[in-house]
Length: 335
Ligand code: PBG
Image (cartoon, rainbow, N blue to C red; front, side, top):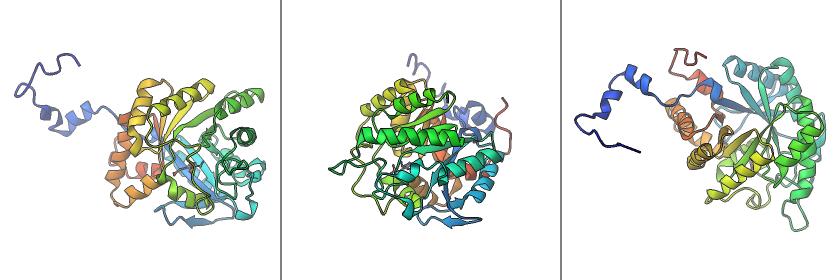
């Protein structure tokens, strides 16, 4: 940085630009708005039903009718997108995640219902088999109990097409199989679904911070072993850049870094290195941990820090609450 120190105290007093609200507002480098937020929802079978999730304060699994009502609220709060995660009945799960390919499965019905009620709300679906498998892994297993990459790809492509046909406008492959972005992109082009976005979980780490989510979708208790043969080692940085570069080459439109807060360095480096929008995922364990502090300001601070790190958007269970708890009643965004 040139001439960094050509003025110093007392010519420079950094506090002059902090001394009152007006100057603080004028010099603020990053902002958080409803436009930045993606609200995830968990969906279950039933009517007018909601279930608490022990590990996630204030988060519920909703039946489709209540999900639609929540989606309307999110849209009315100015939130541009939601992500839908199904909790599949245990009797519908099998080794191969067959229910993922049922065009009338819970997630496809949920997407159709939300899109019919709130057509302009972006709907994001996970592409992965873990809600549907009896072993809780994101793909099908080979004879030694590891996830079989190429056999899984074939199923994921079909799952992605089904979700797109149900009205999902943004597919979010979270499975971490090699080659899945390219395979899904080719299939979408082949089906003339040219405007369906892929928001790739490109840098997804094998993290303990996902535990509350696994309770929410009912995969945690089933999971055999861990996901380290496909999700990334938390110690690795350069590998994340390679994962992201590959997914962009294969046709990803947006990139997710996950988890969020312990991985701010990855978000910052990714947004410096690549031009595609980077989405931070503040995952379930981060959410629950921060909710434990019982202080909305702390959550808003954590979300703003994702913007400072370079995220274009943030997937957060706190999205609707963030808008509702905004301390700011001035309209922030003009154009
Ligand atoms: C499953 C999936 C996971 C999350 C999103 N999609 C969990 C996992 O990979 O085991 C985690 C989200 C969260 O913790 O909030 N493919």
